[in-house]
Image (cartoon, rainbow over all chains, first blue to last red; front, side, top):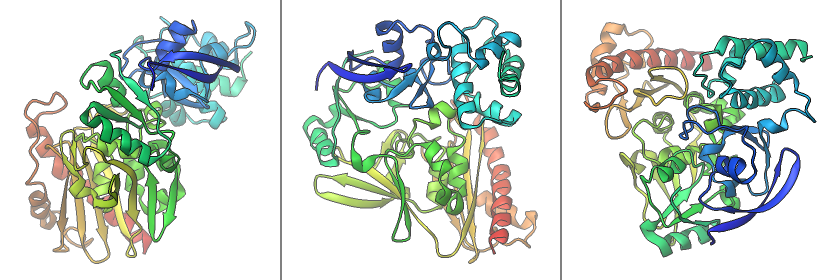
Length: 158
Length: 287
């Protein structure tokens, strides 16, 4: 038992080994220790989804997990979506549809949508609604966000 | 966040030894969707957090054993609703698991944690009561099984000793099909605690098992053996007084911000009749 523990975690495809404080959440470690500030802190009670990341391909609220819990796992954040400055099809579709207003919830929306499409390449409107139900948008841009996910399915992005 | 020590046992015995050592200074961490919030808000201030997820025996798994489905303590809501055997034998549990939080929460929150947290609004409590689930409890002196109706005590309280933990929840696969349905009342769909949770099950002998929560300190199970409720030919007027009696123990909080007590009491028989109709339809389609 220590106040810090060494962990090994693959973040956006890159294996990293480092020490984390045992009382820090995954969200805190991503933002403060690794400088990956795309993942947002908002409600910190698991209701808004702004902190959504994929752990071993599964969307989870990074505010509700201790960083030590992901030891040995693969974590994907919004920074892992595009490659070398090129946006992925979902990000392109969000831009095309005007789905990002203030933008704060968008990293979480993108990660939930990414997980949906990885599991279900041809979702219905209901599938999209359910997959994104854990991501709140204070701008209430839900129609554009849903349209963007469906557009990414059809067009495959630019 | 407040500081604490973190322990990651790899066996149940090791976890029990840690509990014996630290007593009420220790808290168990399974999915963490309740505990991490409690830690951040300092509602709980344990010296040691014991993470159960590296214990092989508790790893997510659902297996069939001697006519029972055994759901290990590490199994999360999403795994429960994806399992074919749970879907076939215990559809009301799937309906309840599917309403918990959001997808992000269901990928993390465990069934065992939902019960051990002791919330009167726990979505999975009513179906587990209706299906007669057993809690498998490990302590220094060995393993024991406790019916969930005896395990749930009150808000934040379950019948778990200081150095005990739940290793699994078992669901006996009934020889006579029990058809059940789950329903809930919330302010909005998704990411909301329920103002009423309710599960109704009927079987071919005419027994109706009704469980409801979020309208008192704990989820309650009531059983009707008159056959009136389960009878598809009985009229709504005949069923209404029986149903009303089954909800007589409801005592919703007058101070809850989710719904007033009068509204909850008025809605109980409405939800009850709805779930009962679905359960009867399901029973007739299994014959």
